[in-house]
Image 1 (tube, rainbow over the protein chains, first blue to last red):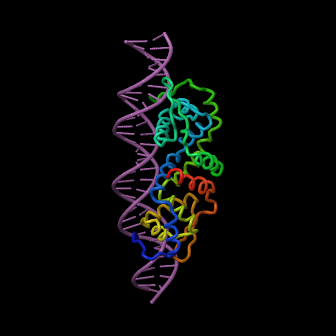
Image 2 (cartoon, each protein chain N blue to C red):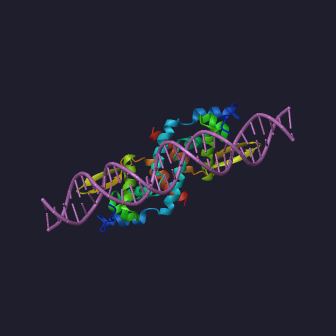
Length: 118
Length: 118
DNA sequence: TGGATATCCGCACAGATTTACAGATATCGT
DNA sequence: ACGATATCTGTAAATCTGTGCGGATATCCA
């Protein structure tokens, strides 16, 4: 049934949640960031760039054993999210983690979680 | 173009990435976890449960101002991922964060990132 | 037992995301 | 200038996701 119930079962808890939970706006931003990271290839690219400093699309594809298309699309999204920056030298475009890649995301979260979920 | 290039531009970096980057399997597990969290409503539910200890679907819907259907679906996914546990008392089902909810995800990552992205 | 309550389940539709492909741009070597 | 290289852009098809609805299940109260 889709009816909303009128009477909370635990009014105190409802009130507490109402005040303490981040707004839909704040969580939408965070969700946006997380969904960019929520992809195996994009994660591997982030780890790879963290290790090597910088790589071009072709080398990335080679190292991770995926098509250049796939690597290119992944980089497109990472750049759009401001997580990866580029430097062009001749016809090759080098990619690196953006200087303002969220510190806690990379070091606490990703490096820690990869162990936990293993 | 979909052609793979033969010759890496930086063979050393490619080799380094190859050895240091987590496997597709490991990153797939991590990506799975992150995609469960990559949703505004599910994030708000996690924050709410962290604050209040436990809440039933109806109260959650009330507190977060969403339909019971939406809250129910979000909880379904959180449970399937093992992030939320339930306790049934009569006809009401109380939801709480699973005892093995990844610690770093909740405290370092989510709480920190909500500030950064703000 | 019968009616109301709290929640769950499955299905179908709309919207977002991903992939693969073809064409465009820019640069290099000769 | 010409052909090859490295990458980007745009787009259409395939796939994944979230929502809302109708209906099922289980429990409570009278």
